[in-house]
Image (tube, rainbow, N blue to C red; front, top):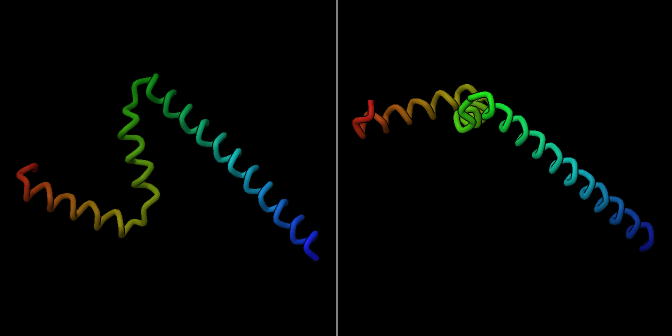
Length: 78
């Protein structure tokens, strides 16, 4: 029984290692896309913000924007 448990653990660890390697590859690909965008003149910081906003739920995004506007108004920023 212990051998089967050891095999299962080894397989799980190996799957995690493969997924971690895939994740690194994807992160490299994303970096390459941002570098390409920068090379053609896009503002990468703004693009990252847009990606982050697009991930958000519409209600959460609206609430965040409302709070941001409130803070900006309180600081005389618009």
